[in-house]
Image (cartoon, rainbow, N blue to C red):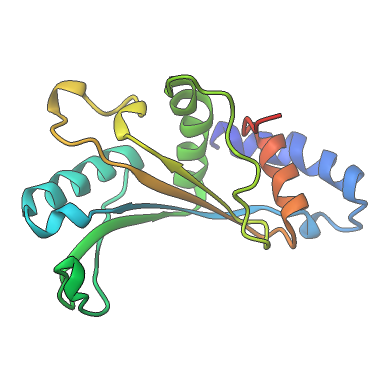
Length: 179
């Protein structure tokens, strides 16, 4: 069992039941999935960037990414319908917990001048999205092999009913929010 999943069941669930007065264990919010998305507008001109991004996302997440394509043409950006514009991975179950453990405890600590994640990035339904400026913070990425720094969005989808429950859940899981 992943370390973060064990922590969820042994520490987070009892603490949240006390704080929010849930009558049933199944009412306690949980993390449903983690979506990692890399948008690549520059891949229109160079297809090697897309291949490199997909390869690095597979290394980071441990799962093969899918290539996202443009839904409609936008002439100002030089985008045609069905052109590849990014890649994403959706993580569930043990892979999700292992990625979150690595992200919270290792990767966030490697961000330069890190003072905590913003606490206002919730969407109103308890889901949290954080943007990462470069993929080099992950320990699996080799600095010498990287030609382009890629930013990514990491969305943590929870079963929380509101932002307060989602924030408490992520705080108890170890997410370092700004004070």
